[in-house]
Length: 167
Image (cartoon, rainbow, N blue to C red; front, side):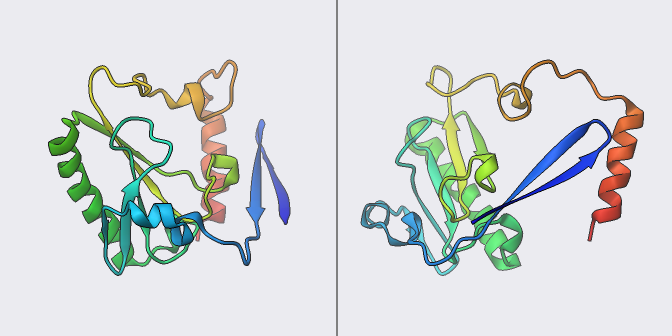
């Protein structure tokens, strides 16, 4: 079930998509192929290769507990994810000669999350790989077209709006 909310402020509109998920099978929790390629798992976290890698060695790190959003992580889960990122980076350097990393997650369908289980992408990078070299978020993550720098007065109004709603 989809529910759309619009928040109008200054000169732009934010659309917030809320998804109600219930009774669905989870690819990461239930799929035998995913389970068969687990690299490491403990009570809190699991890591396995992505089935649609950007580069060789692209892995996904997930909490074992089925959650959708990063703010649903316990402190222990968050620390376990951070520690596993550090460990897996060292392994990817040794295994594939990684020279750098893209580390990211998509949260919510409108942000590109296609599996309803929080997962962190760890993408090893090195010169000559097939991934995107120019990481310029304004070119592919945000609104398209001309994006002039916002006036400070507008940014101030936006900051005030967010401050009123922060918990």
